[in-house]
Image (spheres, rainbow, N blue to C red):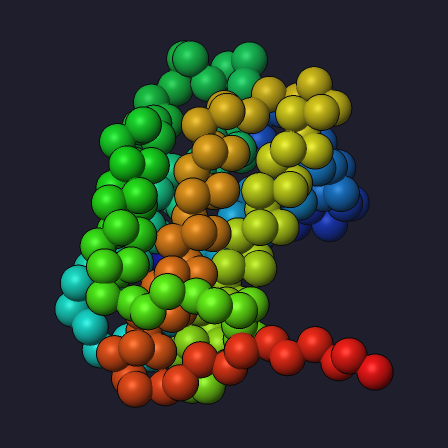
Length: 187
């Protein structure tokens, strides 16, 4: 018999962290890992729109790291040392930085702010960047409320949003989609 997807345990507005601790579904920890899950889904959506093999492979790796981050955020921090939750590593941040540098080598220097758009894949990557920034802000909020979040998670999300911005530019470059410079109204 297949495992049922519904448990009915959340029908009262509560859920359990990994480790069993019950919290309301409105808890910032739930909001934060839900946003990371949203980001992971959107990264998959972006990946489905790309044709560059290296970018596609990198996005798959990023999805794995986001699942790791989500697991960490969904875990009761007092019980996490007793569990085998995968860890994020400093090298994961370095990989993003190296990819940013690699893509920037072929991109023209930015001379103005650019507007999201020009191609569906480019716009989708900008949306993923925005979701990533929201996840980062929620992690910082947790930290400010003295709710444990690994500082490396915040660093990774910060660098990931930079990566997604550069990937949007790189994807547009590969597709021949011109960037849309922001031309502020002056009068």
